[in-house]
Length: 65
Image 1 (cartoon, one colour):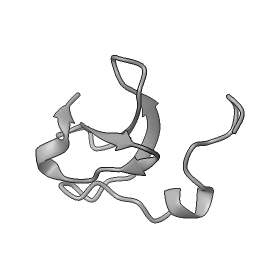
Image 2 (cartoon, rainbow, N blue to C red):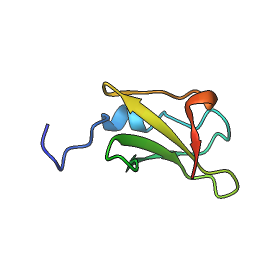
Image 3 (spheres, rainbow, N blue to C red):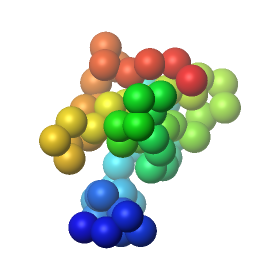
C-alpha cells in the first residue's frame, strides 16, 4: 500500500456508517497519527479507531471530535 492508497477498499467505504448517528464516515488521522474514521454528523461528530486495518465501530470506543 502506498501513501496515496486508501486503507479501506472503496466498496467497504460505501457501506460503512456511524453506528450512533447513521452518518457517513470519512478517512482521517487521529492525534497520534493512527488511522481513524470520522463521522460527518455535525451535531455529534465522533471518531472511531482503526486497529490492524479493521474499523472498530463501537460507541464505547468512539471519541468526540
